[in-house]
Image 1 (tube, rainbow, N blue to C red):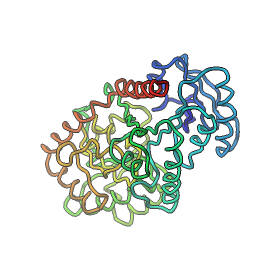
Image 2: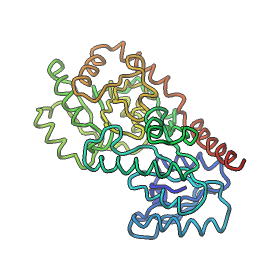
Image 3: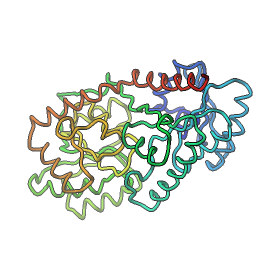
Image 4: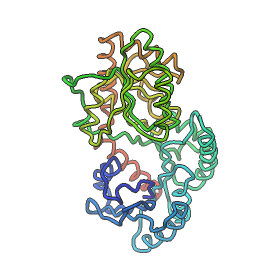
Length: 368
């Protein structure tokens, strides 16, 4: 497995670690090659998962590390499959190709697709489209994690339908992610995510400004930080929303994040491009109504007006949907429960088993 996530090599928990804890049950051995990172060390976890961080200082050396160290591992044992997590400038994918072994390219998300809002995103979208055309002729399959957005892109780029492997990556611990009816709700609207260009945080603030015209005390909670943090604070001042917006401290555990989801009447995602988004599905598991742009897996789940709301990304459309939910407690309750029912299928153990079985089936197909 060629991963861009070095957190496990640093001894950190998190989503990747939790995935590996369950995923390891389906394999004799998993070797993971990941980029360099501070405090990253080779490790063995869960008895059969071996983590190999690159010893090279620069991430641009990753294809060389994968080819060199991957070939060493392949001389020691016969791997059934190589899996490459591909993104950015696709260094893992280049390394996977150099190994000359059947491999899967996992493309969860294309930065800037479907809507690029910065020059960087336009460049990354261009590179991704070139890479997809290239890898479609070389990889055994391309794994995507939603049923509409990414398969449509791949088909439009000429990828054969039989090479598109849909295996969702929403792994929810439903014993933790659940409604907490007694939790107080200090926030009318909640945003959870990094403060970066594709997350649409300024759209949310401008919509809140419109909502404030009729609901002067409306409250937005922002749980996130990032390069746009200062710009967001300036926008809040410009719109005179200082009394309407609260920055929320980091929620470091799944339990704390569950409490946060339960402290709002609705969660909003205004992203222009996404791989998941994970937070929307987690909020739905907690019975929280979600308003989202049609990015990532959202069009596969949400039926507007039944279990959530989709909007096109425009400020007025978002404001209108916020007002609908603010003013109708019964509707909020019904939408929240319908949303919760919609995401029960993403229970972690079942989804990770589906992920593993998908690769076992592919291996059997390649052998036949």
